[in-house]
Image 1 (tube, one colour):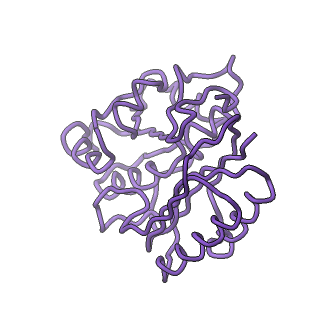
Image 2: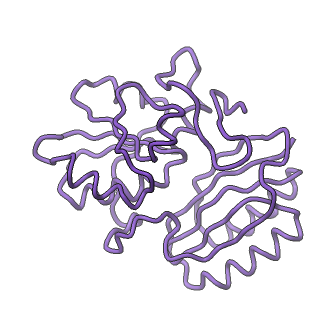
Length: 235
């Protein structure tokens, strides 16, 4: 059984190239596979290890540089990635809105156990911030598909489909939470006042909420060879 960790953190990185170089060495030494993206705004990625010790080695190195991590652990029966990639990019999740800073202003986090109550409110507009391909695999009841092929298109959706004067209460979600950090920050900057997002994303919800209480429909697409996960993060 392979250990899999999906992680991210928005936090200033003074030397992305140096951090990436250290991660490449450590991932090679511990036979880690997957992808990590490092930018001046933080770190993002999903990695896998053949053993818990190797995974902890990498996570401990990352924790040296970041004071906290949004982390979701799961398992895979077979190797979920073919190789390891550590990339340095301008953003850890591409939205192309340089004026948005999730370290300073984001929406209200909603824990998985409280999500059902929030989306049961008929006045809440529920938005799936993922792309249409992911939406088709599975989503929450009443969720809106923004019709995007890439996250950088999300601001256009907000500009054309939403109005802060009309849509007073927004609840948004994504796979692990990272896209909602930027999306909620963007919407607050555009004048939306009540913006909520699912802490830990769909993965945390599927991990913590019992299937018989779940409002999730379908499967959750993940970016590795498992393809989708269900309740309990089962392959």
